[in-house]
Image (cartoon, rainbow, N blue to C red; front, top):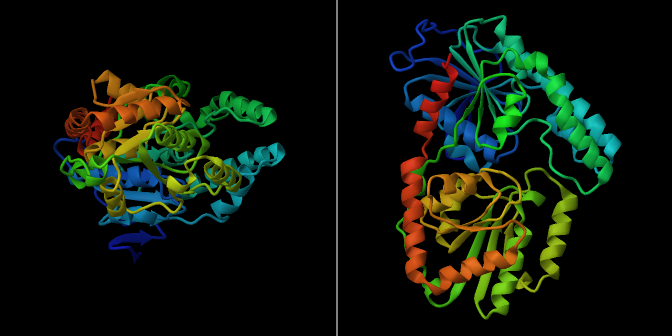
Length: 436
């Protein structure tokens, strides 16, 4: 085992099995500390998964449990501070994941098929290697997202009494409509057939946890109980006094979009909304923080071209590198309205972090974030997907009514504080893990 420095944080890194510890025997999670392992097969992309795994582990650790995180690849990126004090164990794979993913990112349909097969083989080998290295006395094993549930099959024989949960953000072959008709059909077929191909792995899992309603029927295909558990939030870190910036008072507004670079994020709609606002005589601009985590040069080029061809080009700032947690706070302080325009059902942690920081939210109706807010009377302005004129109208409404701006910002902040936390998520996770 050795220590590595992650920014200002230090994480313990181990390349072999951890020392054994006494098993609690008693599964009463309220009385005795548990030994919990978290397996994630790809923590090399510093985005939502990397962030949420660290936060879930910290939430469980704060409840008094012993937690270790296991992965073949890791890059903390801007989330280094979230890993402070966590036991992170890296079991390297024989082949670099980056080489495997090159096929998946190819525009060639045949290469994509080969890529899927390569990813499955890589995932299986990685899951098997980690399962063989995990302590034999874990009380709970979280197989976190992607193909991590495969580790359940290889670990179960070593520890039959362990409660094994698969936290599923998306199915590995999650279907999104593609422009290329051949690729689109292949993607749809993979999505439909994969549950049949993976059936032998699913049976070793005790419970599947999803983070939105859209995922419940998809996860049900696994034939296991499904629990809905919304992701948490580090509210104290993001909380800031609600206020109107001086620039905003002078009639200048800056829209903000945050998330990985992807066509489903619809940053184009933010750019178009800025164009509309400026045509309406409003001094609008936008800041888009879209880390190019997937390295998709084709889409990045088309997005750059879209921005350059728009009337708003001089007023759009794009950050493809991403920001640290502290940098995100500074970004919130330098902007006025958070826009979450995705055209797919997705949670969107940054949207709720912005609300915690006192920013009013404009959110697409089809997102899981919007569905959750509507369910619980959360404060936001809702727009239809791919309708930048609605985004512009919502922003103009907030610009012209400062009382509404402040009310939405305060109500949104209060909503997040009362409804979302990593501590609540950790408790919900354990409740689901031990549900009979």
